[in-house]
Length: 565
Image 1 (cartoon, rainbow, N blue to C red):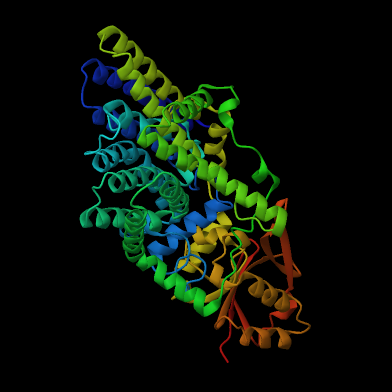
Image 2: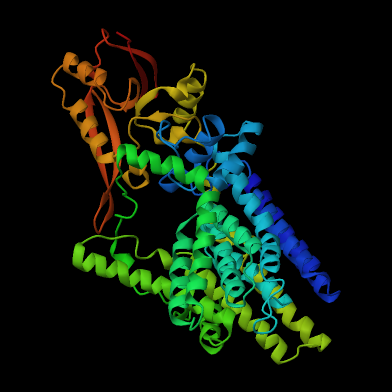
């Protein structure tokens, strides 16, 4: 660390003091709770800004998912909103809405993928607390099925507990999944209550369908869990009007699919045209079969709060809202059980652990907020001194668990500022060169430096990470083709294979090598161990000057263009 790093941490702690003083003032004066959430979001965002200020890399570096995320932002900003981050002739396969929004801003400001990713995390911290507060108030504003289900304590604590207890690396790295999970939970609550109370008009179908479509284009998996819960509730809880209930769900689904069609239709067409290989669902490690009940690891206050949330789910299970949360919570275990059966019978995983990743913890936190709301009214906390004492302890808890609290003090986090301070100069220099090359992003390229995609878009022949490949790219066949290139016995044979590339005109190679060979590195899915690194070696002798022209050679990296016949 240097003194600039120390200054950033001093700034974070000054923000901490500012937050505590301002929060206690708002509580003492009993101001609108939205002010507290705006304050919490603003100080969290400012602290995150100081934490990543002057870092050339993403906070966790540039590896694995960080490369893919930065590449998506960068491709949408600098190439096309309608192109996959790796294969520009294919549409996006990962829900793109969140990436589109920040990529448009990045395009206007001339940012690369890393800078856009940082701005997305900053915006999440800034807007999520107050945004979720107003979102749930909007959806539940006319609901009174079981008392004050949208009371002040509940609406205040729901977003606060989510950003306090969820892992900060998720909030920083994948805020879109957190937003989608929280939105799905309250959308699901509102939809079922509207239908069961006979308030589901055409207008409500349109509103809930549009919201579902936006969630689908942000991160669709949580809607699958909600669909399972809605089906179970309709089959088990609804003794009358089942046909009307399921017709209402069907109407909502149709509107949602129509709203998500800008993402869905091009993707489905690409699958029909090219086929599909879904390597994400094939990923498996033994951790996926482990029991998930962290609330019984009584090692910290966060686990205790989740335990309280579980207790609230059980104790208030006969209340409509909590019953819904309980059904949704159980879908994580249903998904897990189905995944275990698939593994046992068919040897096929499908991300059996996903329900425990963000959705289940978020449900417990919302249930905890509900339980605290009920306790608050049960004990009628109107005594001014008791009210201020409880609220002050809550402020201290949030402060300690926030991004500007213990998280910033962690030695691992402090080391990240050192490790992420500078990007690899060889990669940056190569990216600068490619940016100056005419129509660089359109050229079909075989490359061995995926970090480049965070700085400049590249139309890949094959993306190095099998797990994150577009299903319609058919990774296995592309990998075989690249292996056949490496197996060429002569320069002529190699050139003929390049000319006959089945994926379009292969125009360029971006390779790293030593004196004799170039190397391609791949991360392949491997059952049980997760990922396996494979290396393909291509002899430099295969790049004959008759057929190939080297235009860049620096720090071991070379750019080689195919000479047009």
